[in-house]
Length: 117
Length: 110
Figure 1 (cartoon, each protein chain N blue to C red):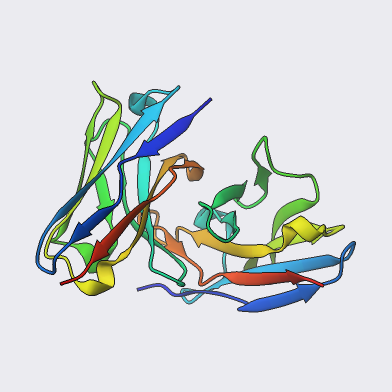
Figure 2 (figure 1 turned 60 degrees about the vertical axis):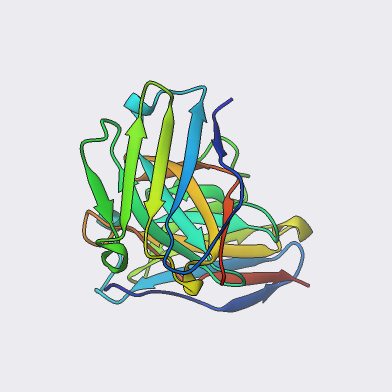
């Protein structure tokens, strides 16, 4: 049974950074890419980034350029999202989604990141 | 930045049929936009329903179907069930690179 298990909730101050992890089970990261999607409270879904199955290619929505990075560790089947210079409007649930061949399918359970002074 | 537009809300009666649409500010949606559809219920992660315009995942109920309609991507629910009440999101890839979500359609079954 394919599963994506994400790290626990985070509370950060404005200006800080956050790292969210997404561990894949029952499939190999080497076979599938992965996207990150976030959802602010009461709002819609926002696609943020994608990393290829090899980890060699990353794509980002322009608004996050410069403060978002995504890395993958195939040895531990874990993908990481790293977001810097946090602002209050970065408060959201962050999801990882298995995504290859234009077919996003399995979703993680979500990680709530709260940015508050 | 591409804007993807969905109906904010729709209401359908149980057993009825409803079509949700998804338009792109870049022009007509084609199969090369690789439309995907997702369902989200309150407090839950989204669930994938349709990929690459019209393909169903193994868990997608038969009453859900995807298509292209009048320059838009479309999701049709036939024989709507009460449990279909949810928010529905489309996802497009207009540039072959970045994905863009629509704003979502809140479907009420009444």
